Length: 340
Length: 159
Image 1: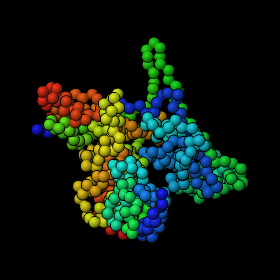
Image 2: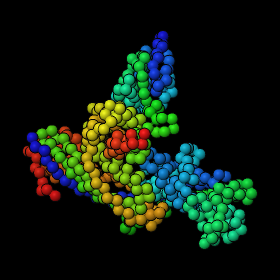
Image 3: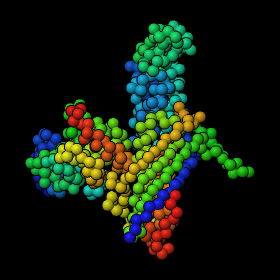
Image 4: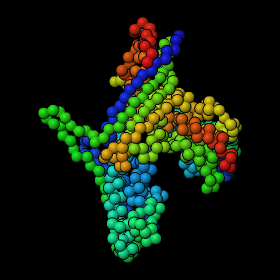
């Protein structure tokens, strides 16, 4: 029995969002008389950080503290329409919609403040701490709370805004077949190092090194948690989980977590990640989105690493010990490739 | 079928309920006591999110017959914070981004608490061993392991 080390690489050119139907998302922003703002969305936060990042985008656009913004994703029946949380579209599509809504709400807020301070709205600026003042004259100031109260009880204004982001639908050019399926692309490259046991066919992850280019990282810690966790979803797809191990025959399909395998805490390996920020011109504050891309490069990188280790090319997922062992037997033993 | 009276301690408070024969502890906690912090994941002991402490020991509540805990002390996630103050493990989970969807989090926290209660300075390998019965889909485990290690080294300093 020998354990063979192998290294594989994969790169991804990843479209953010999708083209189908224009991929729209809507957002509504309004203040209540306390000067706090609510963002209404139907986009669901599955733990990836949608609420945090849209909250940041809204606060930054309005010019108010992030604590003064609440994101409500409670109900897709009563909230503004969203296509959904998928295709790495959340930060980009929903973020753009929130930005548009917050911009409109800011316009009303500045008009209301201008009326209270008896100046031109164009001469006002926000300090990001909950105040609006005349440019160059910070003492000529009013709090966003007082503006909200004046708008509600005196001026009869709704400090609110509507936003939608819609990609122009791209048809296929009948002459060339060309189309623009996405408005921006993120990129990644991942190197996986594995150890393959030629007697059992088992594959252990040894380490991963990756680089992700995903526009501006609006919340670096959230980006990192996506990349760390997503890579293990990729490993899980590459080596462990499937509902149909003998597709299309459903016999021997997993019935529980004892049979439907996923990596456990003892299966993980070191993973060094570099995040490259190249702001997208049409992203909210330059953001694209990590999303699904965190899992994608792992699968081909692992398959390539297994080939590098023992010389078998498995193109059927997941790459179970059984498949590795059968392939090694079929070629008459492990054939380690040149170390890269 | 006649119900069985059952008394035990739940997060330091005496509770008394009537259970059907065969009711598991998870159902008793969630449906009869109203403590929703232990989660129903697989119902077969494969995922760990229903983990609770029985007399300080980690158990899968979905595989524990409710009647077997008569007179014993049950601790769930609902009881680990001190009033408005989070438990050092909860604080460390938040600081280390150790939760995403959050469904595994109750079980992870209870498994980690069981570890730190008996071993306040665990090694990384001991943390991995302690949470090895708990499955997480989102985090890749690394932030959870780091959070437990951070709570172990920093928890008492704060307390």
